Structures are given as structure tokens and as C-alpha cells.
Image (cartoon, rainbow, N blue to C red; front, side):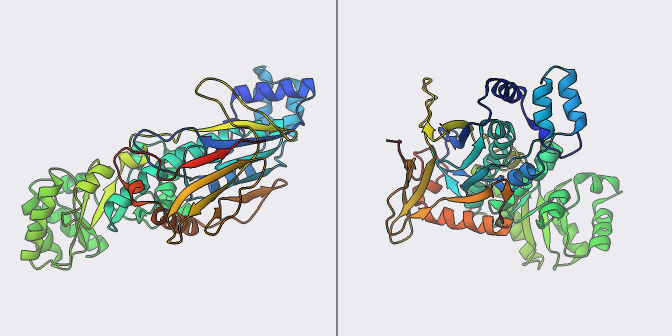
Length: 428
């Protein structure tokens, strides 16, 4: 399988269903699948739709190569009939859903996939793997952005994730409002600003701290950031300013009691005339530790492990369920996993002030339109052809506006009810 080729991201059980449906004549039944969350991760008051743009690009490339089909045949995963079907596979259906950057809540139909049963069911694992990962990262990152209160955030978690997951996580974090990343692949692929500084290893490489700082400034100029906590922070700051001068762009602190150290570092920088030198802090930061530093003179936060792992919620808990066959609603009745049948249309209601009050989801029909209502779904693929997608910058702004629109209680980091209640009206 070539790198980035999505076809064998299909699960074995999906091909089992495809094979059986081809044999019993149900393969071409017109079907509707929906992606939604039954509940939000513990402690969360909203979810963030992220990864849709990546998903549509992967579906555009979704083909089975001869090598992949041979692999499936050799291991009896598929029979000859299914292999022939896979060889000609292209998605010809429709996909619509919430915009990237849209907030979602339990029951929100964030993605709707329509077409024949076999072409839709084949996309389940791909859709869920992308959306569950990226949405989890974006929700965690959005909480960090809120906690930062307008201060900058650098995503620097590449070393804590799979190499491709790291790039996807960077995209999701930037969508959520992070200002830059240390991940150069994400910078090149998605146009995200990059930032970074030396690690402790560079200081330890040299005979003393001053020599290391001088080498870095000579190579990168005074706009660089010097890491000052390899030995003694106070002495490190004095050495940094002695080497670079008071117009050094920034220092970084990566360990210790960041609240105390930021306060003392600001006082020391100011006393040395470096009043414009910024303070960047890093070291296992999450939304809670960022919020705890709100009163301290921190200019930029560097977040790594917590953002790329969803800060305690590594998946968004999304599911992909069949809700309609040949225009007829179908439902799953399993305890605690019941579904509501029928294709759904969703609107979000707002006060005249713009504050969101409720989400109305109607099965096999359309919600009554009121002043202030906003339709939440938009087309992504029509008859197999992707439509123009919003840019990452557009999605970033969409989320920023969405966070402004929810009640202020919804932005709290503490556990509570979803910020916006969802009412699902079943099919009649």
C-alpha cells in the first residue's frame, strides 16, 4: 500500500458486509449513514468538527490497487466477485455535513453519507478514524485557546504522536486557534506558521551557556528564542541578555514552577532593560495549567503532549450508523446504543444578540425556520464529485465565531451540561 493511500484503511468486517450484500442482492439499496456522538467526553461541554477537509481529500483518492486486491484474495478476505467490484470502486454518492470548525453536541448529525449500501459502508472506518482523531484534538485545543485568553499558543507535540497523526493534530490545533507549530511537515502541507527554538541538547553541546547562546544568535539573529533553564534560570536570563542584548525576541522556560518563574523572569528581564523580550513557557501544559497561569506575565504557551492526545479525551466518541434504507427510516434498538432513524436536517437557534440557545434536528423533514436560525449542514460531495471546500483559515474563523456564540457557561473548563441542548424530532 502506497503511503497515504486510503483504501486498506477499510476494516475487515466492512468487506465482509460488502461481500454478503453483493451475493444477496442488497448491495445497491439506497442508504443513508450518519456520523454523530451519543455523548461528549467526560467534562466537555462542546465538540468541534475537524478533519472533514482531510476526509474528503482521502475519499477522492479512495481506490483499490491490484496489489491490494491480490492481498485480499490471497488471504480469503474477499471472493472473486467482491474483488472485481473493488477493482472498479469509486464513490458516486453524496456527502453533506457540518462545516469544519462547527461546534457539535450529542445527537448532532455532523456528517451524512448517502449512496448505495456497499459504497457507503466501505467508508465507515476511514470517516471515523479521521473525524474522531481530528475532532478530539480540535476540542482540546479550543479549550486551551479559551484558557490562554488571547495569548499565543505554539503546538509542539510531534514527538508524542505517530508521525502522520502529528501532522493531522497540528492542522486540528491550528483550526482551533493555535498560532503556530513546530511541525514543519504541517507547515508545508497546510500553510501553518512554524516556530521553534533550540533544545537543552544544544546548550549541553557547548562548553558553556554563553557560547551556545552566541552560536544560536549568530545563526538566527536576535529574533530567536533562547532556552534559559538548562542550568540556573536567573543566570541563564542574564547570560541571554548579555549575549543578545535587550532586544532579544524571547526566552523560553520549560521546567519548574512556571507561575513563580514567569513572575521573577519578567522582573529580571525588565531590570536588564529587556522590557519587550517575551516569555514563552512549555512543559506538559494543558488547558488547566494554562488557565492557572492567566495572571502571570506569560506571552506565549507551548503545548505538546496534551494537545496531540486530546487532553484526556483522545477520541471524540463519534459513531457511523445506518439510518435510512430506500427512503425508509431504520433504527438500532440496543440498550444504551439506540439510534433515531431517518436522514436529519439541523438548525441552530440564536437570540437576537447572537447567543445560541438550541439545536433542532428533524428526521425526514426540515425544521421550521425562525429568525436567527442557522442551517448547519452544507454539501461536500455531490454525485461523487467534491465541491469547493472552505480554506483552513475560513474554518478557523468559523470556530472562533462559534465559540463567541455559545453561552459563557459553555466555555468553562469544569464539567457541566452541553453548552447548547439538542432536540431531535423523530420521523413520523
